[in-house]
Image (cartoon, rainbow, N blue to C red):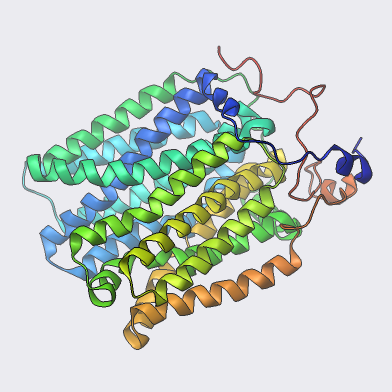
Amino acid sequence: MPMPHSQLRHQAKPFPALHFSDLSILHNRNFLWLWAAGGMSNASRWMETGVLGWLILDLTDSAWYVALVGVSRSAPLLAFGLFAGLIADRTNRWVVMLCTQAINALMTGILLVLLLFGAIQPWHVLLVAFILGCDTILDMPSRRSLIYDLVGPQRVVSAMSLETINNTVGKFLGPLIGGLMLEMTGFAGVYLLLMVIYLLALGLILQVRLNVPGPAGSAQPIWQSLASGIQYALRNRVVLGVLCITVIMNALAFSYVQILPVMARDHLGIGPGLMGLLASADGMGTLIGALLLAALGNRPQHGRIFALGALLELVCLLAFAASPWYTLSFALLLGVGLGNAGFSTMQSTIILLSAAPGMRGRAVGILGLCIGSTPLGLLELGALAAMVGVPAAIGLNAGLGLLLWLSIIAFTPLLPGPQKPEPASSSAALGQGRVEVGMDLPSPSPESPTVGQEGCDA
């Protein structure tokens, strides 16, 4: 029976002092194996993203082909996000993750053989980039839904913070290791290393021993299941708000990274060394913010952290576009990263907490679909920069993002306090048995055991 609105308010606690006790989530061996495998996979993904670009440039000497590799890598997010979420809801998520890591190892192995025999062609690179992109979108909803199954709602914020740390460290280490290996061993050495890392990640996932029920089967036809997922997202104002802000950030904010070298050379007057340091500021800020969120643990301000994190990113990006000084630009990109920590961590957390169990995979899949708006943003930013210049293009996109952010905040309950739960019948109409609530969600009571919270260390 839902708790009364007044009781929810009464149980709200003040924001506590910083502590790291919630990092004890790593004592859960199943989550630890999954997290370590994710770290390897993330580092490999960032490594192969850079190396694929260098490889196609070496083969074609064409900037167009380099951009085409990026589009091939990210297009599956837009094309297959819904299907990937449906697979996560209908199949064994652990098996899906095993399959994606095996395919990653196979694809890098194929490129390695082609390189060794001197038979590599540009279309091989484009095809492999597309398949690796498909693997990424298949892995995301299954992985994040499985993490929720293993840790439960009480620790999902800490788990997603650690996931953000994983991704951020991968952003640093992947390109760094890939570049050093490329200098020392050439492309063959890099792809041998990538294949080994993917196989190691596969081995770590094999160590996970599930003690949670698998996804319930569904007799619904595929298209009806997809339609019900979209309908659920549109009717759940919390999920809808997260998805809308995700599209804004991926289309209008994150695309600045691709033209940062032009901004550095032509506007700030710096060389590649200082540009590399400037590019790392975003990642530094994200890592600091993710560590703080992991230390704070499961707090009830999920929606506020998400929305205000996105706001901080947009404001700092708008100021960065107008900054004439390197030091100020570095500090502003550090702020962009701090905002991104709140945005990216709470993005998945809110989806996982708000979506009904039978819709969780599809909700994350729709999230992947929204993240897939990045290629469209790249095309738009490139065209706009050609007309008005890079600083103005970044500033116009950030300003438009701020206006859209305000409109979304006006009609979604991301910033307000706890919302009164809707009647169960409103959600039962979709066959899910879970209602939409506000973002200041109370933690489950100790008397109500959480699936995956206990007994995970088989």
